[in-house]
Length: 245
Ligand SMILES: [Zn+2]
Image (cartoon, rainbow, N blue to C red; front, side, top):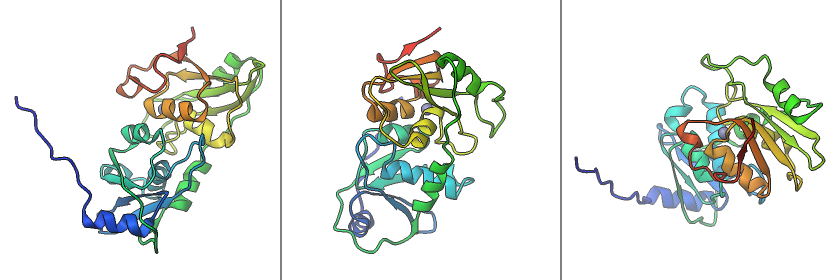
């Protein structure tokens, strides 16, 4: 069977006009009513935020029932973080980088507060004892499987001295972006100290792997369960993470 050939997507006059109106550090998504949702964020290196991630988190927070359909549209952005392509692969569909214009009067729906509300759902859990004990305690009693329920996945950040510093649980039932690793990085809110290890109960998906590699390039990542899913293949951590038994 012949492959279907798609003509490469080309930015239209409206895209170029919006790149001018929004200026740098902004991601946006056309909405079915002809309006546009946008968010601006001037990113600091090695932080788990970007205009594209803010946009995806904001869309899903503001329109939880429509987010899946909306995020099938092409995201436009004037800034691309190292992990954005993987965020888009897991939570959206396509993204295109456009050259920013000077910026003017942004129009449409500003999602800054919705993105902040999504990030606020990320929280750290108390951790104590040995790292493995702390990891097990995070997922004990969490029942997964039913629609809307969180899968029992936890992440524990272990300091260079071998003591757990912080832990987070998968919160994808509350917000689809909040895998345990994303929840941990966004709730931690500071650079990850050098020499740390991250213990996770499930192998990182490509979004989390790319975010972790950007946040802490020397982080030692160890997981308990391999993830056979398509989003865990060929991640940014491939060959760097290790399995613990
Ligand atoms: Zn993940």
